Length: 411
Image (cartoon, rainbow, N blue to C red; front, side, top):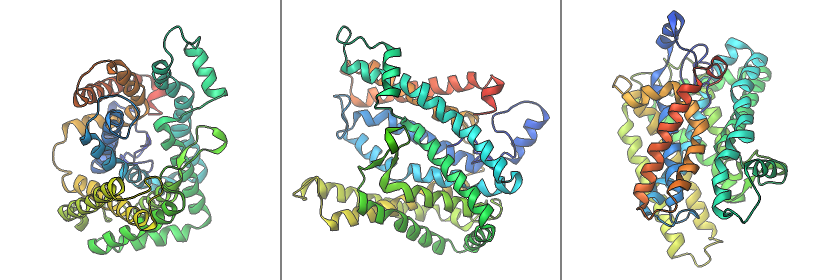
């Protein structure tokens, strides 16, 4: 979800700076955008907003008293694929950008577009976002913590949450790894890209290979650490879910490999065999998601020790998770490519602001959840208010912020 979802910089396909508009240069850039991949990124960002809007109203959550089982299914669905998919999308244009800019310039640019927003997020945006959580458990008159006290306590004593901004530091780290790989082993990068390109007209082989990669990078870590372990070095806001370290890296490097050969001619090209078979990928994803649901049901009803499920269950769940993640990633990309010529009013309108929406949405999510907390509205109504309000406010703030040239060049 980097701001650089651009050709050579992320997912948009724009040759140079993504945040700028106006004039002949803007028109030239717009003509070079790979819109279908830009839409894929925007779809994932909408899912992020939906995910955070409804998670407070799930039965496994600890937030609002109003809950709905359907939101448990939504959160389970999203959590099982969407961030891995985003890492793959973010890797698509890395090789082209490295080739054009050189490793040092590329890393410097990525530090500007990912590192600065990350620092702003953890020092400013996330403390503002999490302050309502503090207020909910510390009623007026019971504490002397005003916001400045809360902010100082957060960064000096903790906990110091990063919220969704964890994605930025992980993506920046992977960008640095990619730059190092291209610098030290350029032939390896080219060979991997050409190997993936050979699968352009063999969609079933490509699908099977990606399923295998997904299992290989996730299942061992899942069995070793489980899904509740988070790595947070030194207590600083640099978290990553331990079991998914290799999953995210593997998907990112897969996207990197796809991007070694022209995206307009490779496996995600318009009219590709992978895109034509989107109904098959949906079918496989449905089967794998059904397996996840069955295993969750078994966990709740048939496993004696809920906190320590047996090896057969953990292995089965890890397999189902990895297979679903791969199948849904194929589905999202294939459908965006297949229907790229169709009109997509909301997605296309959001595209220039997608990164900014991601960066700012968590403030509105938590404050709106705090605002409706005391009402006895149904969970669906509360979630709808939170989602609609968050999308509107974060989108509007991004549009206004991008009128500032300094900000526009960053997001």
